[in-house]
Image (cartoon, rainbow, N blue to C red):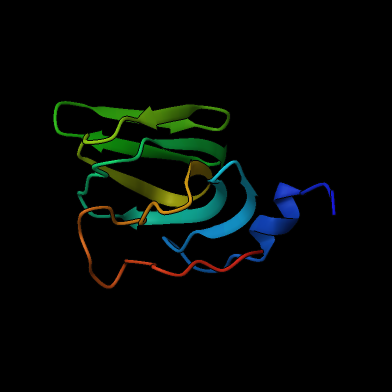
Length: 120
């Protein structure tokens, strides 16, 4: 069934941080929504590129050689193999677009790892 997705409604269903939810699937890719706050972990994705779009708020994408501040409407693509760490001083709403098999913590497995994502 074809239905529209309202991002404001979907983000209102998310009450925790660093726990992506699936909002849509297309061509083996997932549209994921997540709220960030605080520091994530340094990690890489050996086989997948990642797309981050800031819907509301701002966050910093830390790379080993620089930091990139992303504000509402900005996006960044992290190529596979590039070590990175998102960090958000305040709550931020982010849309991610990546292959369905992409693990949120990449090459690291810890308490932040989400192997089975919920659909909203």
